[in-house]
Each structure stands twice: as structure tokens, then as C-alpha cells.
Length: 414
Image (cartoon, rainbow, N blue to C red; front, side):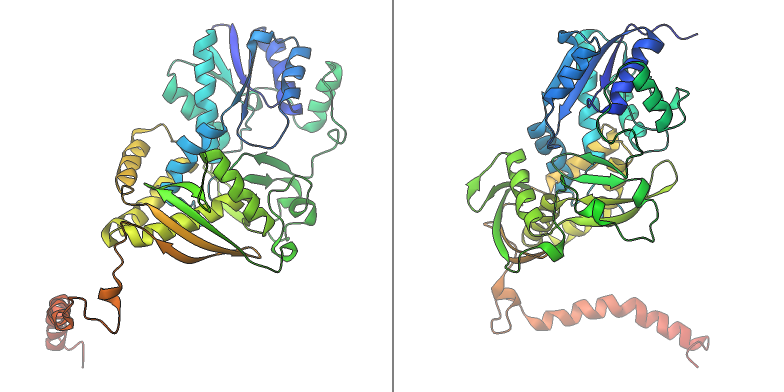
């Protein structure tokens, strides 16, 4: 029989589900609960989380609400964008990249307060349970993990609502009914999933696209006039917009505002979940979409061809590592070291045109540019002897000529 839990750190949003989990932990494990709420730029007022935790008997010293926005962008989003990361060619991994940071801070708090367990609210169907728990074990191998959705007997929302009413847990207006969809948000993106989005053959409804807390408007709603911005990079990381030096979180927030106002970053996506099923969601990543395009553009003039192509080969592997929750693994750190080594020269400016959901690169420059107008120009020789190409072509064609001679002898060409 497992030893009793004395103290547990709960990843706590203050919403209905995690409030129910808080009470369930108190009842089921008869343990002291520490709540941790991370501010990752989700755009919500987090003070009520403290008030709700206090109302449910959590000691003031056991309530942690931490502003992690700068760390999130600087140490997680930016390193991922140095790799030009896309999962399955489209998804900018906004939810995936937040989980290792939340898990890291949870473990830090557990060590600080002497907790012997941590708890998350991810369901047994999703990816987040894997992302949280793999991170927990990587950072604290002997930690005990409590996953209520895999343990309790509740079968659905009616059971949760009944439990909340029984224990006096406040239920916000409209929460007694099945939510039309669920939302996860942070400074990089929002993801909407479930219920009205579960049929991938039906267009994303306006209730999702045009809700009050949406991150980006639709391209149809966007202004008829283009917006131009310049993003500057230093060693692979965005550092300023239109000449204004900004902190990582402030810079991403400004790109979100610009992109969102111009209908950038909405994505209807069916993805392959790590647990084996397909999932359809609607994602909003306006700032990330601009940042991805800009970073790719500055690399186009500062990276050697071989380095760029190798990065393109490594990117899908890196993306899968992040998506599957293996941020703290040796393989991610090894890939990160290789990617970061390529970014020493990735410095300069990218000018962008943003119009009705589209992001176009209209200019790029760098003090370390490998682009030579003298070499590529039609009107200049630039030290390049065009006759040299003949030997290169013949060497590359040699094996094909030999094979063609062989095929002729065996009658393949007759």
C-alpha cells in the first residue's frame, strides 16, 4: 500500500475543475494542499485564484501565484523558435511549450515547502498528462504524482457539478452546462478544443472565432490597409520592434497585438496526439506566426546552406520532442546546443507587411549577411567564373552516365 500523502502542490487555475480537485485532494488524501498558479500571459485576472484557495482552507503561506511571463518567452518560446519549430508542418506548439515551465516551478515549490507529491488537472485522454508527469520525474525522480482524472469515480460534468454543490464550491454562471468548448491560453497562443469543434468536417463556428477573449480577429474583419513593421534579431532572438528595444514578453505581446489586429494566426488543425488519437482544435498564434516568418527570413541571409538544410532536417525531430513533453531530456538539450550554435550570426532586421491574415517579408538585412549581389547579379561577374560550373555538372552527372551505359548493355533503353 502506498504511503500517505502529507503535502501536495496542485497546479491551480482557480477555475471550477481545479477547485473541485483541490477539495477532492483534501477529502481523498486528507493532506495539506499547496496551490500554484502560473501567470504565463493568459490574460486573466489571477487574484481570484488566491481568494478561492483561501476560502477553501488553504493557508496563506501555501498559495503561490507567480509571474512567469518573461521566463516563459526568454527560456522556452525563444529557444524553440530558434529551431523554426512546427509540429506536423503547422502547429507552433503554444500549449506544449508551456507545460515544462509549469512543471519546473511546481517541483521548485514542492522542494521549497517540503511537499511529497504534485498534482495536475490534465485528463487521461490528452497530451498534457504526459508533458507534466515526464517533466516531474525528470526534475524530481522520487516525486509522487496524483492525476485525479485517472483516479476518481466522476463520470462527467454532472458528477462534478453535484460534488461542487455538495461542498459549497462556487459555480460561475453558465458552468452548470457543458461548456461549448475549452480554452487554454498563454502569451504565445490560445487553443480551443472539444464539443462544438469535435467534428472536423464542420467549419469552426463563430462562437469560437469571435468570442470575447479571442486573440485574433478573422481576416475578413481585418483592416483594408496593410501594416508594416521591422523586427530586429540578435543571435537568433527577436530583440526590438521598429527600433524599440523590448523585453521578450513585451515584444511577443506587441507582436500579438499587431498580428491579432490584422487577422493573423488563426489555424484550424487536426493533429496526432501522443496518446494515439487525432484531435481537432482552433489555434490563435498571431505573434508567433509573425515571429516564425521573421526568424526564417533573417536566417535566409545569415546561415550557410548546409546549416540551414541540417536545421530543416532536425526541426521535425525537435518539434516531436517538444510536443511529446520531453523538454528536459538529453536529446532535446543536445539538439538545442546544435541549434544555438547556428545562431551566432543570426543578427539583423526583417521588414514585414501584414495584411488580412497574411505575413509577407518585404526586406531583410544583416551585418553578417552571406548574400552577395555581385555574385548573383546578371550584370556583374563578381569574381565568379561561369565556366567553372561545367566541371561541377559533369562530376555530378558521371554516375548517371555510367549507369546509362550499363542499362544500354542490358537492353533497358531498347
